[in-house]
Image 1 (cartoon, rainbow, N blue to C red):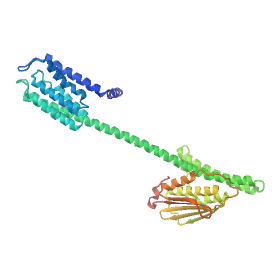
Image 2 (image 1 turned 30 degrees about the horizontal axis):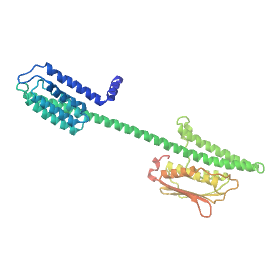
Image 3 (image 1 turned 90 degrees about the vertical axis):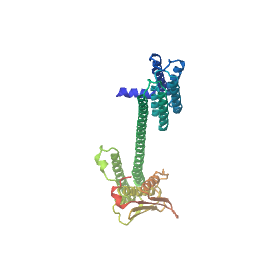
Length: 400
């Protein structure tokens, strides 16, 4: 099979003009040889220079039948009729059959039908111009049958080539589409991982940074408060490690089954999140309206991450009080976080990267929700997100 494939690849690599020229040369040799060797019949005359020129005109058109099919069959048919009028020996119809086959294989169906029609007319005229005893009605019938076989054979091969080309093109397009889907899936997964890492690390590190600053500031004067700050750092770091371990476990399925199977956080843990931020020095006023119901896992996780990011921003840039409102309604959950705009004295100055807001917008956009964020009159900052969902499809929706 490998050798056959190599031969096919070599054949396809040849210049078509070279192949057509070689076939035309073989036809010329096979058609011209009988002119000098075949005995004459009554009514025929010996071959002369004109006979050989007409045979050349009959065979050479195959060399350019791909580019000029109508001209090629016209020249060949004209040469065939003139040869028959000359009463030369060895009636040459084989070259016409090969030419019709080539045109049917390499040209359009309309051009192939035209070539077959012209060849049928030329062959009929040539047969009936032969001297008595050279041809019979059977000769005419067999000539037309051979012509039909050549035409249909070329049509069949051309159709098979077209089908194979279409199948190869479809396979190529499907492969390209599959590769594109794979690239999009990889990109989406990278964005999701980046979001998760940002949500986990940014929130936990903000709490740790604030509490470590507090502990360093009061370790000599108020050791009890310093110990409380260190305890908060320990609890926050452990929680961050658990979430990072879970996320890495998803990426390494099978390496750590326990980590990969730990559940994602959700809105049921909003109270624990508020308590964690309170321990970092921000007063959190949490208000929940409505019944949570059965939130889809994706909405549940995204709403929690949005609340986490909003409280992280308050912790890093906001005031000493954060008001959190969670509103459950049929088919939607809304999260609103606002601060009083009064920066804490223990907050270190700095600027954020803006990745948190981008991540929140991406999470909201996945579910077709709404997100508004910006300063409010009188000072402070407000962020509000609404995530809609179809209550009936909640059980089948996955993580974003």
